[in-house]
Length: 296
Image (cartoon, rainbow, N blue to C red; front, side):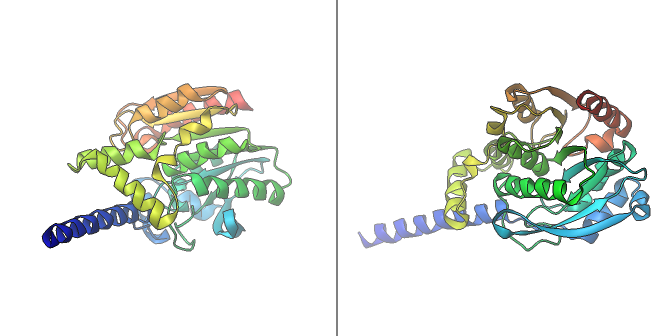
């Protein structure tokens, strides 16, 4: 009997260790520094435009008083149009530069910022859109107050940033449009896919979810941007790389089908995860530009 108790205790210990480790790995992965992110961007496209811009760095108070670092990139030609860009997981505000150049050329002032737990912000865990969307709502409010000349405001997000952007739509923000590039409909299907690729049984996701709830107070299974589409009427342009094997295109297709407002869907041929704008910059710009003409 004693041996059985010991074996059971060892198994339970291993279960909890797995749950806590995978939850931590999933929600607190290593983030890039600003220097690392800018270097990566510079290696993949021309970032020279950034240095020449008129810029303004500042902080705002996000959800629950969490401090967010933001930066305004002023359009070369004075404009009353603004867009807030949200980067992907482990990246930071410099990850948004590959989209900022396009929007600056199209006449938009760009606001780039570090999502919670990223960049210059205080380290913390990621909630895959839950708290991040509340932060974004605070940034939207701040933007409208800080820039009284504002006449049009849009959102653009990549990956986690897309999930954040789409989740925020459930709060019915005062914005004119949203662009969501390679977002996930729910984080569960992404993690299950990751488990499969590592030859880990999918059912163990439940243990990771348990670890997230015990360790951070949030359930991974409730991180579902697609649910924000049920009553959304804000125009959305959905973009996804056709060859994305990390967050499958079906995520974006499902959200496109679910949203209730004006919508467009573009799948970039030959593009992997978060690579659409790098795969064919001119086509990407044209798709976005055409969409913006419909929402002005």
